[in-house]
Amino acid sequence: MKITIAGGGIGGLVTALCLHKNHYPVDVYESVEEIKPLGVGINLLPHAVRVLDYLDLLLALEKMAIKTSDLVYANRFGQQFLSDKRGIYAGYKWPQFSIHRGYFQELLYNTCIERIGSQHLHTGHHLQSFHQAGDSIQSKFVDRRTNELLLEVSSDIFVGADGINSVSRQQCYPDEGPVVYSGNVLYRGTTIMKPFLNGSSMAMIGSNLQKMVVYPIGHVDPDTGLQLINWVANLKEEGENRLTVRDWNREVSKNLLLDKYKNWRYDWLDVFQMIEESNAIYEFPMSDRDPLETWTFGHMTLLGDAAHPMYPIGSNGASQAILDAAALTKALNDYDTIPEALSHYDKVRVPATSKIVLQNRKKGPDAILDLMEDRFPEGFTDAEVPHSEIDQVMSRYKQVAGFDKATLNQKSASL
Image (cartoon, rainbow, N blue to C red; front, side, top):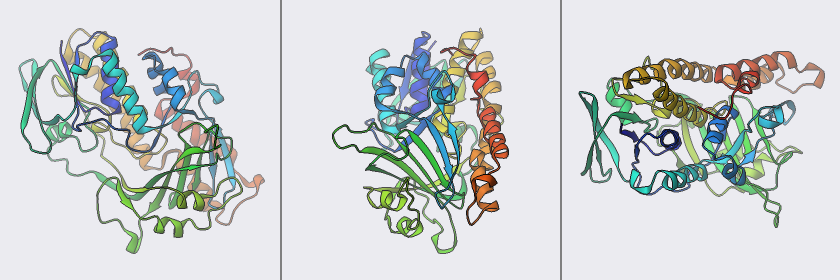
């Protein structure tokens, strides 16, 4: 059996590692010429870390990532109303990690080279098209800059893991159209600064009209006492501030954010200063796509953002791609034929991820920010916080996203 993966992002590389560990020959084809540590921070939830533990990556992750201790929710005045313990600090068998996306992808890529071999990792190969020929898939890869045909590959299984603007998905659903834009703009940056709270906390501040997400993605430097902090400002578009350019990761001036967050200075975190001291800020239109009925057509299937791009709410994007990788590999182990295996993978993962996409459109766990803003627009007293109602929202989302503690802790580090 020969398996081709289009896309060398987190989903594609974890899939390659899972398949290789289970003795499936696999090749990965990635559009970019060189894998570089680009991007900012992401979070890996315990159910995804369980899979990374299965791949023996836990020690490497601990060296570069932060074990998130708690997720703190606060209003725009800096009043904290929830501290939700995370990962091992909440009693899970596995930690939640906050990590630089680029460093994580680089770790996965280098691990693939060590375990699978560099001859099976093909950078600079952009998917042009694929078609089924009997029981095989013929896929063509080109140089993205020149459109020159580089390679035509025949394989038994084709996995489209080529991101939110997936060629694989577009070929399966040619009439789908562009991504669904939320009306929210994310402004992302990093700042080297003093740790906030306990140095391993994550914070959600404000409301979905104007929000700030902050968490560390690097260990404290013992010489300077400083730490690399990842932050994401989320602004609802209004009037003259509406985003008209749909570029991803476009560098922008910090002036707009400095004006918007000028009063966000708290005794536990100075948001204004954090923005002011950042090196570069990137604009990112928050988008997703409508859930699909199926990802699988014969001997091909979709995975990761190609299958289920979602709003970055609840820390689920990368985690769900990792769960896809495990589910696909397990299905191939459990079923005798490729169509049966891919059909089972489809039946398990399509409904699971569709629920999350739709729940994230409803603000996911961040709905509690709006709950507090709507009820207490001028602030609140400790006695006014509706803890029971907030706990229900958080618990329900963990169940929808698949990391309910009682269920997850019954599992082992396996597929």
